[in-house]
Length: 334
Image (tube, rainbow, N blue to C red; front, side):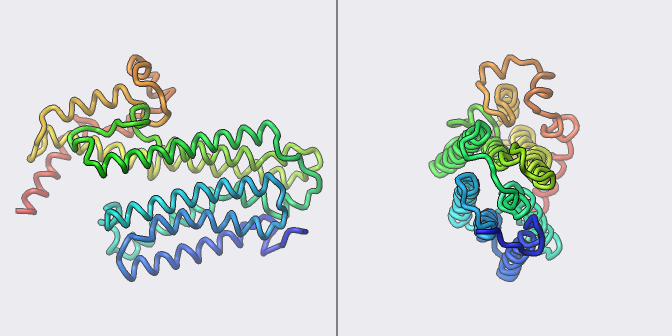
């Protein structure tokens, strides 16, 4: 069957409209009821909707199209399901405490979620689009690029899933102690394995989706669309490394351990030194054995493993400000 043309030859408009409508519905519910139960679920499930929608509109059910869609839907189902389960158990999401009651700040988060879902979904959107599907003969599924893409996705999915399960399990058991960084399971080899796994997943999906571009009969516009969808894994990598991922996780964690040793309510004099030792031996993103990582010089950790200064809580630069803020908060509570 021929692909269904909807608004444009790339399915850019229809996927954007569906994403905006779905996210704005979620925002309306979350804002009206002032709760966080559906926020992350709406983001994850949106990927499932776009993958299924574009597959059905494209009307091409080759193995590659089906496998690519299934991989996205499996990833989205696990992510949305886990995040929904976690927030239901926790009762609320502390990330939104400062913006939940502010209309424009809260709306800004949902607009960002629209950009995230729509951009990262581009590889499957392009694969199913009329521009690619109307080009005639395409390589059969099973090329080396296909296999590599599936393997990279599978490794990333296993890392991300295992990391989330392990951290949730140990937190439910009450371990590790609050004065120690979490380093159980695969978290011994990376400070943020879920981010690393997610990055691998989207590079794998992109590798799988661009295989038709190797066909000599494919049009130049189709090739450009497929190769251009590299914006998806690049955006994912940059977002997690410089946006809502590492920067928002690393410094607050460092601040927490610093205040445990130096703050107005210091409870463990050795917590800050122990945390610094943890940083010195644990890769920030890529899974890597501790014994090897620890012996690498600092320049190699920064240049090869991208453990950049922007992630770190600087005792001299940030310490005084953190203590002052903690003291002011303490006075406000009294």
